[in-house]
Image (cartoon, rainbow, N blue to C red; front, side):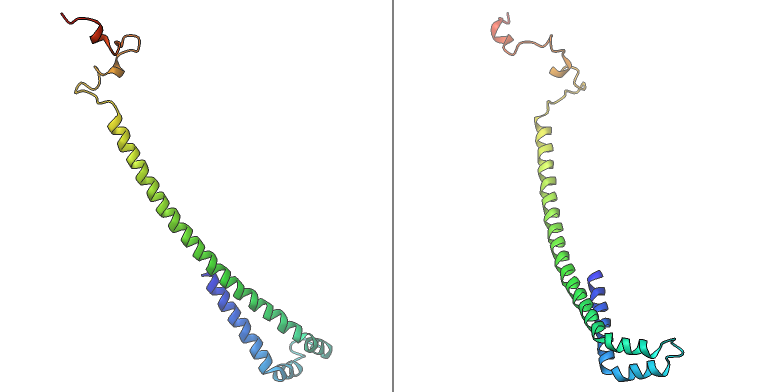
Length: 141
C-alpha cells in the first residue's frame, strides 16, 4: 500500500509542476492582484518569481524520490514474499522430519505390559537387574 501511495504522491506533485508551468503568468497575476489579502509585498512576489525554478527542481526531486521508493518497496515486497514462501516450505519440511523422528522414537521406546510397566526392565532397580546372559550360565534343571 505504501508503494502505491508513493506513486499517488508523485502524480500529485507532477500535476502541481504542470499547473505552475502552464499558468505561470496567471499565477503571478493572481498574487499581484490579491497581495493585500495574502499579506505579500511586491518584493516577496519578485523573490518568489526568482526562486520558482528552484522550487520546480525540488518538486522534481521529490517526484524521483517517490518513484524510486515505489520501485524499491515493490522489489522488497517481492523478496519478502519469496523468503516467506521459502520459510513456509522449510518449516513444513522440518515439521515432517520432527513427526518422523517422534514416530521412530515411539517405535523404539520399550513396550509396557498390561500392568502398566510393573514388570518391565525400567521398573526393576538397576542393582537388581539380571545379567544379559544369565540363562546361558546356569542350567534350568
